[in-house]
Length: 470
Image 1 (cartoon, rainbow, N blue to C red):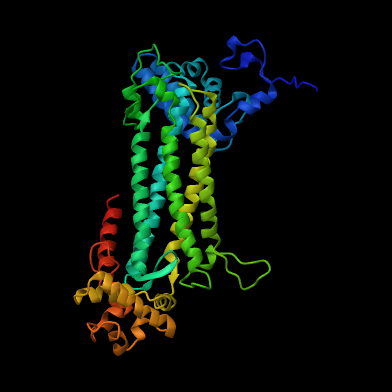
Image 2: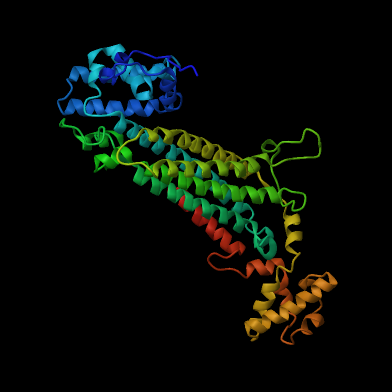
């Protein structure tokens, strides 16, 4: 077998090349480089470098002239990258070296002094936190948009009746607004988890250097304040090696995707001919290349499918970290692509749902017809009998016999005569029919958390206040 002897740049060209006498293998150079994906951290790398330079100036480790030159140079580099003029080179390995190399080209020795008191280990940990903090804020905004759409849909459909299911069997009638608010509550927990994750994320690693801190008299509290961190990390070993914040975010993202997948499953069922409860806007669906009648709910189906992608990233990052000794290891380069893809996937799914939900059109008559099937008011009849003095277990047996007659004669309880119902229990009177209607059933559950239209409207106002307070 022929050995690959291709070599890349001279070791002298590397910022760490002083100890090396042999050039890096070309394949190894490409294999170990992260610039193809970590260049998206450029804003946050530059943001961290600005704060670090200002801190070095305040500490007397850089002259005012060097600080001014560095800040001006970084501003130009940021503009160059945004204009697409940066030349990305595998030989420069990562975003940190690209910025430093370009800065040195522009301003000379002052550019080399910027790295005083820091390492790429604490630099990348800081960049990722800055980036993810910004992404969490954006995701929270998309969650709020989706929650707002659900609340307004609940307000419009507070009294619209549909069947509630357990085991995907008709259980009891509920209101469509109540169902939308169930989704709202799931997302509310997601929003709170995101904010909680952000709190633990907002700790600054910069100044931990490679793993042990630095001998220079740096002011980490000042740098943290410039970057909007709550405080600097208290242990340098943990600061550079910790990726708990990324795993925690992926856990939160997985929960959000699980919820969106559940929403998707219901929408897919509800738009089928067998349910036909709602209509999705055409612009969120596609057709079939062979069956002209088809209208496929592609957005919910894709969101349901993408949940597995995010779950996989969570497992990947847990596996990445489980065997690492302190402190930083090259393994951690593999944290970025799962994290980046999770954020991109989650943004897309939340945006799709937030755009789609305000335009969903319920079909009240179809839902009402479905709610009349499956004896959905049977529990209401049992509750009626209990109020008449029957023990619940006896009431349960009476209703079971009434349902048996309904199955045999293919009639709902509300369609039976008073005499038929009284044949199962003499305590039943004419007022029973008030509780056997769908409207009577949902209206009777008029307590906090219940499905009654009155409660739905109260919860809508509560939800609006929650959203307005953000």
